[in-house]
Length: 547
Image 1: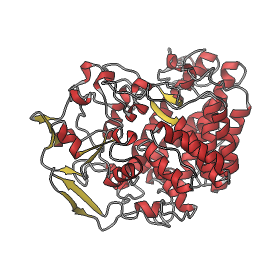
Image 2: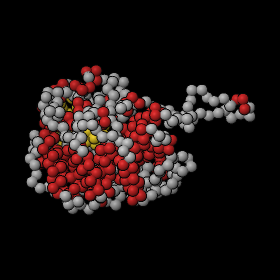
Image 3: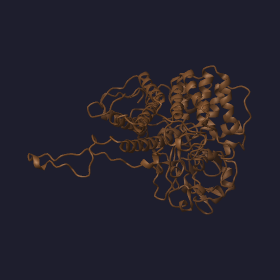
Image 4: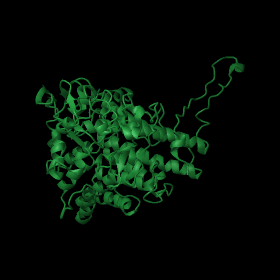
């Protein structure tokens, strides 16, 4: 089977033009340019178009992950000061319709829809290669619309190729978007054109969409829709396939052979038994990683505000840390540390692989240079760039970047299990919910639960999937469902951004910045604002309430 990596090249499709002239003899076709009408004909053309789509999809996922994570109750969005980063506005719920992050969250999935529709319209499904491409395109379009509808509500619906003649259309109801999403997933799954992994250890069928990957995302979309039994059915299909399993202690070990839960997302475990699907990364010194490596540097610590051995933090051999460049948002709130500690204890397996405390910093000789903005003395450790995987050339080069080596992992088997647990408990299948939750707890070195509640599952999802892009949408979804346990957007994000702290290594000043406008507001923030650029481009789109 041909690997998608062979085709990771940018495909430039430029329509050949003719010089307008009254002299027919001057109408000479431009040399070396292929018309879009002549492209997409062969399997090779179709694969090149698919590779370009996968690259755009990868970039879109990176945009979603980076923004949605800073909008949760687990993270701070600040860098050096209150106005240093566009993510601040989203972290503190002060953004408006012209926010750059919202624009990216809308434009990137919308761009996927446009590209998918072009491929579906121009690639004839007349060979096995092209039939599989059609099935993949249906999954990718359904994925894109799933995020658009969840974040923005009803949006324009395009099933055909988008042109200048049909691009300006009104929004359609949310129910219509979800129906279209379901239809796309069902078309792909029923087609018979998506392969399954050959075994648990199969690595090749992780970098392209499989039948089970489609079922996993379909189950998640049905969960978002509140279709509990249907969601459970799709997710159980993945579980019962026997093609996936959680990584164990043998895989989750660091450079010192110590147990380290952070290795669940490390390059060492790219294409693991737990991977439902991954975006591959290219490891080289040019920084070429599909276009998204540099953007992920924001996950790291603010290096210039930390000192190690008398200089700005760079390579820290004891931590196998490759350095953190100029860094950014890799701080976390005390509340997420407390949630870990409450469930696992201070030495919890997932906690120690996910968060570093000020005490941990001091033990390694790391100190604060002045004050650290948006910190209570807790830093993300899960997404640190490590030197042993990166290569010695990386330290101090400015390439201290997550995505340069680590595959992006938009769906792990652990999420399938926890999504299935939630769907099952809401569908009154508590036995399955308990089984799936305890599988995740067992890998986390926790005792099994004798019984399980929805609140238990929510707490497991927060810790297991910390900084993996799922919590914000979950909080909003649970708010809309009027869940009574307080683990909802208004319950967890209502004070978001009111007081923004600084930390000098001794004292946390929780009122270093006091915001007048802050917090997630019911009746407004269930949806993000339609970006001004979209309103300008399509006069038939109306803005969401509250903006």
